[in-house]
Image 1 (tube, rainbow, N blue to C red):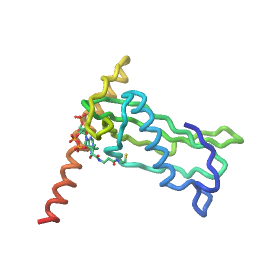
Image 2 (image 1 turned 45 degrees about the vertical axis):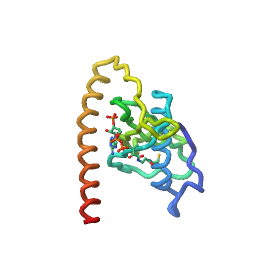
Image 3 (image 1 turned 135 degrees about the vertical axis):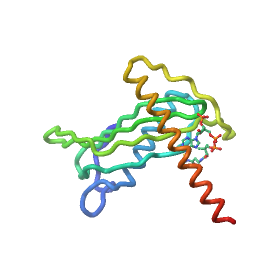
Image 4 (image 1 turned 45 degrees about the horizontal axis):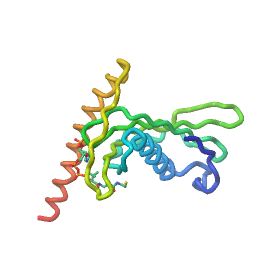
Length: 153
Ligand SMILES: CC(C)(COP(=O)(O)OP(=O)(O)OC[C@H]1O[C@@H](n2cnc3c(N)ncnc32)[C@H](O)[C@@H]1OP(=O)(O)O)[C@@H](O)C(=O)NCCC(=O)NCCS
């Protein structure tokens, strides 16, 4: 996805809002998962997100997404965000994130997703690493659920 950063997307300094970048990351991640699964998807988790450089009004924001691993009903997708100066063509990586989407049917029930076809050693290694990240996410989710239970007690 490529967009030009317009004044409406920016803060008073003339840089794109972090929330706008997060919105676009969510959208491109969802598109990649949707195209893989051909099912409705919802965002289950977004891993730590960094903003390395600002993107200014008039620059291009370029987002690319790739499904890295599939599980039963969930998928991990990697999103990379870059800026491109329109006059020089200079590109910089500005953000990177892993998101998890869960496939659901029209009634909100989880549905299985097709296996990802892993063709290269690099893709296989990435999918293995995704398994470890998934464990960490589910542990973090459990910690949050436990805090919620403690607060109710
Ligand atoms: C995401 C959601 C559907 C998961 O529901 P749940 O009852 O916790 O689901 P389950 O425990 O049955 O897990 C379903 C799958 O999601 C995965 N999952 C759930 N929460 C996760 C998390 N925080 N991180 C990573 N994976 C997660 C599970 O591992 C499981 O994967 P698998 O089937 O591939 O093994 C539910 O929490 C939800 O609806 N959340 C709100 C989503 C939302 O509104 N997003 C923003 C707008 S789209």
